[in-house]
Length: 163
Ligand code: SF4
Image 1: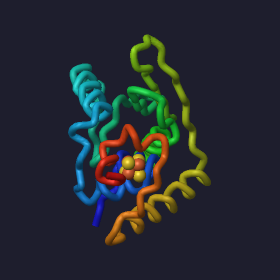
Image 2: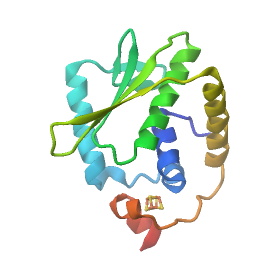
Image 3: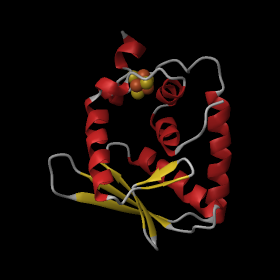
């Protein structure tokens, strides 16, 4: 049984096949440049000591008003938002009600884009149904077949999927 995390929700939104492969321990991501850059950013954040780990979720930053998630690019904003929504809902269910703040750093630029997320009760219920569907999907014995998309060229699973 795969345990849902913010990263899993992110991957599911990005590519269902990638999500399944990752959760079933087919981890080919070590060589990916994007993942390497992400890891370095993660280490830098740890040094800032803003990171908060709570019950299986790791938040980049938690303040009185916001849960902040920091991404190195806005290449897949929908996936990043889905991940942050997951954190908001987990916290909400623990009685910690916050808004989401997604900060996307631009590669090789000084600027960053900022997105604020506020979920209604209805939206949270809808997301929870989606989380159930993700868990069911991950319990399948085989992954969905690969479908070539522009983003596949940058994916660590590209060779596994298409070569
Ligand atoms: S190569 Fe494409 S289809 Fe395969 S896991 Fe990556 S994004 Fe998904």
